[in-house]
Image (cartoon, rainbow, N blue to C red; front, side):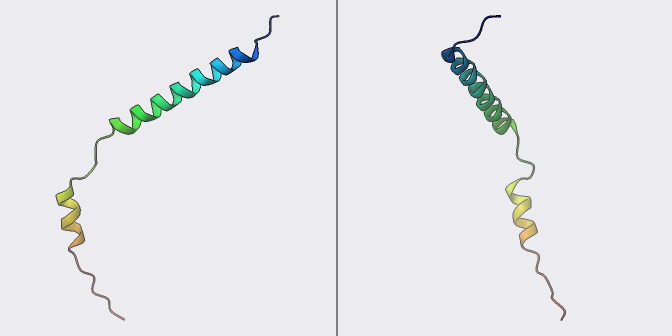
Length: 52
């Protein structure tokens, strides 16, 4: 059974690491924002009446 040399293990590690980073970037940038800025501003204008 042949063994892999250390440089081949390094190449394999780099390939999987770069693939993981690419997939994380794709999923991060493919998301669309769930709410628009106008709806977020309207929700922040509500005042709280504290009754102690």
